Image 1 (cartoon, helix red, strand yellow):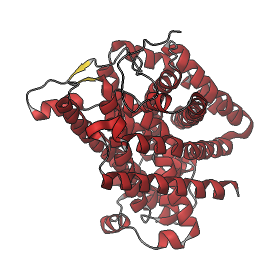
Image 2 (spheres, rainbow, N blue to C red):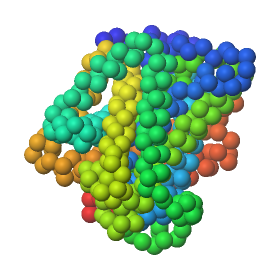
Image 3 (cartoon, one colour):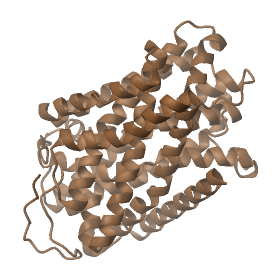
Image 4 (tube, one colour):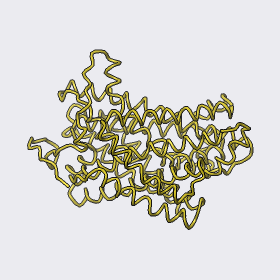
Length: 446
């Protein structure tokens, strides 16, 4: 375990000097000096896709399935609005990392008092453990559906993915990004197949993207809508994105940073558009298959798997669904590992060996998942999956408000500070997320 070296350069707006960057082993290792704009865009592409996988992890599946089966296509507008919020917040996270040379965890450490930083670190570690819990359960359910592996054994097998993560980290960051993009493409291909065989009504799908007053008037619909919002924006993704954009070797001049911010925003916007497609596809398939057939209470992944093939009449429909779930769980595992490392290094300036950090995070997730699977079975794991999303919702504002505050302070951001209109929009989104997640928590526990 080692601590980072202090950068002695004085920086206005910060309480403490900047330290060695998180993920130092891959910091500024990817060259971006391409002469043609599209080649440069490809060189910057990658971090956005690592972030996007958090928006299509197994925790999102339950809310999308419930929304589609219960209310048809009407909640597609909520997925669209959630994605637009995500694009805004991830753009701010990338800008913070590029403009200040700090990721969000380091910025919190260098701005707040030590007790406040420790409290924020603990909350973020809880959120990462909750996210990892969803990935463990999702992967174990997929292994059970595809190969008949009992849930407790499937949970144990997911512990081995630490070996894959370590291997990829040693082979280079671009290889890790390539694997993530491949898994996203796999998930997208699976759902294109599911949409084609479920034959949704295109007019109804288009109408679903238009917000309607029924979402606010129907308490059941509002509850699931807020659940979708709460499950979409992930707190650890803001920490992750603000760090991994610094893997690019851009010029640390105002011109170089402006260019990096532009291409980083393009990267994350395109990647999150893929996440929008996949989340919308899950809801569309649920609406076209379950809601149309009168199955309005399909909220568990296992139940959806069992019903897909009989209702669609296509052999393999359920297997493709489960394969997409497995790819989703493994994808989220890769980025969860990086987020955990960034948060510990950023808040505490403590650098554990990656395998040890990964084992600690995965161990925290496996114990409750294994206990629930052994003693409570499928129903228990489904409830635990929902609980993990509630925990993420509870922590989200503790990442969003510092991010908006830091990017709105000229002393910290210089010329990259949020203009007044963006500052107002960002605080509005932060307040809306806090309001929705607070309402969701009250409803969940009452």
